[in-house]
Image (cartoon, rainbow, N blue to C red; front, top):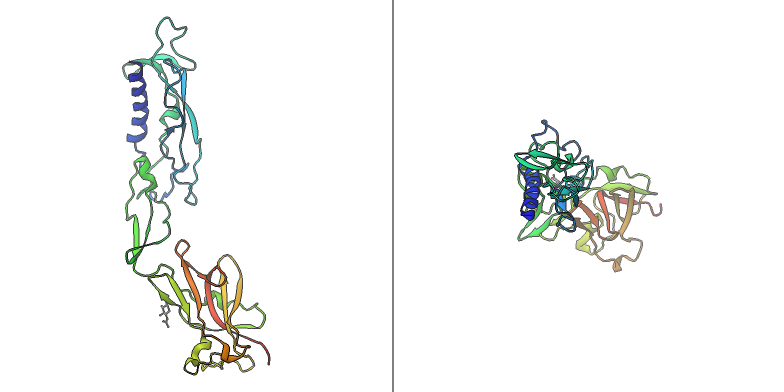
Length: 302
Ligand SMILES: *[C@@H]1O[C@H](CO)[C@@H](O)[C@H](O)[C@H]1NC(C)=O
């Protein structure tokens, strides 16, 4: 009998949380005010410590579903104690309800009440129109495609999401960088931005190679002759790569050194690997993410 009543109380709390989906948020409100909490879950023992009167408590916790989304932190408590076994204690118990509860009739049942407000906390003030999606996880290779997925965070409080949970492409998801930012890299001593060529992207591997302009004498197997495209005469040619790093400054790297004996110089491309989370290319030699690059000339001697 007691355990049946206990189940009823738990069921009621469950009912209030699950079936009472919050009303729709105003148009354009992506994050419900106060954030979006998941369901309360009893932590530790789910057995009430006392038989009646709301004298026992259960400890509950919840997690902020929206915390990983910028501009959508939760306010309020992540844990609470709730009373359990709310049925009125029978004679010869000293009191019928433990404070602050009083005997009353709720929904036709003689019980201790009223239920504390936190037991009716819906977890979010409103349902964002279209739901609240998590950010996408990084791309992963699935068969012959690059696929990324996201989760409907608001489904946990019965606010459905619209749209697809996955995105996929046969192309490597890192976009071809433009030279715009690297062209501004004029503070590297003696280095001058000079020539831009797109990456050659391997879409299966999500790697890329940049054919350095110093290679344009390939048939003669002499990579460090003056390139056939025009460049200022006072500069000696070096296969120089000028890059703007993500969250960093301008850097440069001699991909191969033309000051050494030409005959021993190996053909080398600058190579990159796509970071499938940030969708930025990583320069393999330094392991740093770059947002822009351009080939340059380096003044070694006049
Ligand atoms: C370089 O890549 C960009 C972006 O993919 C493309 O729009 C452009 O046409 C490419 N340029 C050349 C010369 O292939």
